[in-house]
Length: 247
Image: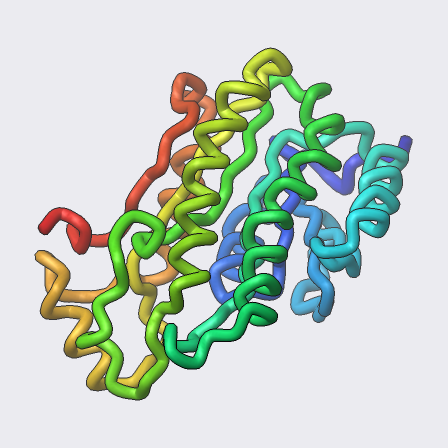
């Protein structure tokens, strides 16, 4: 087994590492941890020795298994899995197709199953193992079409898949507890990313604190769950939305 590159606290696997949120996570978590990045399109934006990249599609179960074996051989085990991948779908119900609906479900829901099925074996060897899934406020409440001026609504399949992820989090929190693996979910509200100005204005009206999140706030919420003082949190869906879902 290779030695870890420098002194690190946790071995963290981020699946879907090229997403907007994941990039900020990698930047934050790699300061003190080994971060292993999985994505179907890898762009090595960092030269840090404690950031490792593997090209892998979560929809390809056999490739996931191959990467798992490589990680096991190199590092022995992992402490954390963070599932950041998502298949975006903006189709209105009237124009939604069964093909696109199924494709989104396959990535967003079956992908969660696949990642946990493959990597829980490496988590079992950790003294403080945890899986963190990314849900959404739209897995809890319906998207409001009045917010979106450009026709890009939150779709039915996005809502269904995010609700499924929240429920799978609770399921696996129970059924993986025998391996001392905790499973939690973070469900963000809207994150500012230079969206349409009208959309931002409409969205802010629905938030009690009158603004979207900045990505660092979502990263901080995930980092909170990684704190060694939070070891009794299990099966929880942490909603980080500025109060959006409170009314």
